[in-house]
Image (cartoon, rainbow, N blue to C red; front, side, top):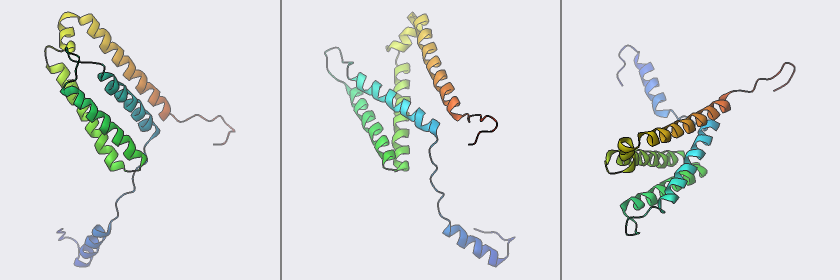
Length: 160
């Protein structure tokens, strides 16, 4: 660190203080984060567990079911980590699960033989209904979370 405009004693003191600096205390999670996280985790568990009901033409499993097992493990480890107050591991497991979800979505949309691209071509009304239902669900979830963020209004003369 080169700070020529400061006197030498101040530079030494600044370097010493920067080396001694303690990490910031971990932030506590907000109520909205906890509720949204629980909703997301339950939804992911439902999707993962129901994916085992989808089989190949001959009734077996394929490589996508291995991804379901991986998602189940990363989700469980993420929840276990946060219960053990290992926030760093929780963040990594949940981030991995989220990016896996994004990758799965891209895989579903990018392959022309899959159901979503076929619906876009042959059943636009059905696809529009699905998108509207998803948008409504997301909107209601956000509206519920916004209600949690509002502070209750106290009437005059009441104590907190």
